[in-house]
Image 1 (cartoon, rainbow, N blue to C red):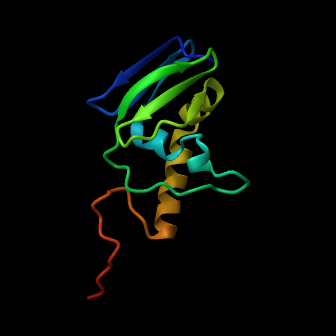
Image 2 (image 1 turned 90 degrees about the vertical axis):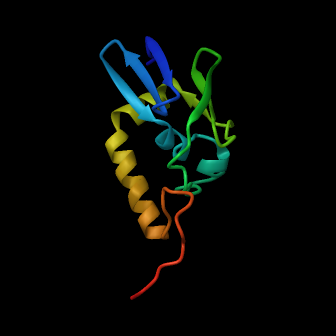
Image 3 (image 1 turned 90 degrees about the horizontal axis):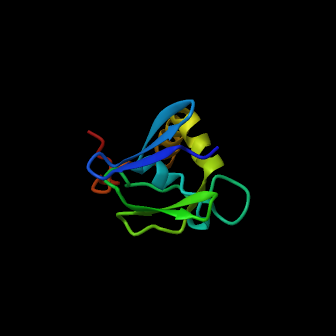
Length: 124
């Protein structure tokens, strides 16, 4: 399902998708860590690569990729994911589930959202 309108808000680091049946706002960080690129998803089955440290990532630009998708260029230089209309809608509708899963994966891996966060843990 293709959105009627797409609005990029660079300052808020969000992409707003306006559909006939509702509006959704996706944060750049969520889009970046769930990029459909082979770099993020991997080349086979499984969870793919855990992307971390993207708290401050923004969206540089959004371009049409034919009539079926968007190419999103992120401020960290990542630009190889093609977000189909179907995948974008899945991210919109499942945003809270995707976000919770991402945070749980970070926790299990001992990683964080902040790129400046230390990997060293002090035990007092």
